Length: 166
Image 1 (cartoon, rainbow, N blue to C red):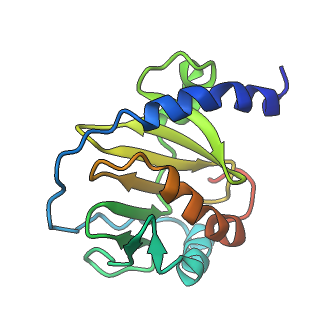
Image 2 (tube, rainbow, N blue to C red):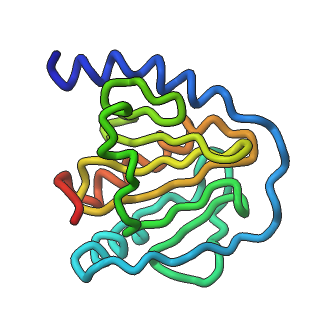
Image 3 (cartoon, one colour):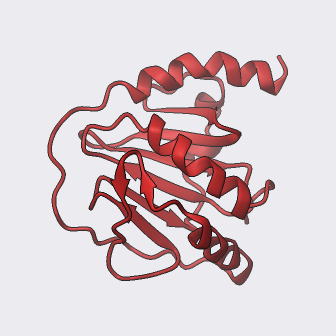
């Protein structure tokens, strides 16, 4: 099966995992660990920071502490982006690639490939795939993530070239 058809086959599973988010309230603290990528990846991340939207999924930009060009946020802790993170272990897990992992699924949204992992409670972690920098987006607050990924896709496509991150 070619990769395009394989991705289309995974979209229903991707949508199903997105829809299982709960509705517990998020905390008010927006503090995240700042990634420490190499110089090339950091440059891609600075380029991303320059083109990120002011509003994502109806939430205004509200960056976490400490301030960094490698992190961004919208709606407090509801949507947190970190650029230059390490490749998640599930990215190379054959169970994910074959669609047999109940906690993770690969899929594409608006021309950007993502690995989606279900985390504790109502949080999902999305990590870009096939880009020269890994961009992680954590979505909580009962959101399914679809609007978030649609809103972020143009910036990711513009700032992070296709390829394989180190």
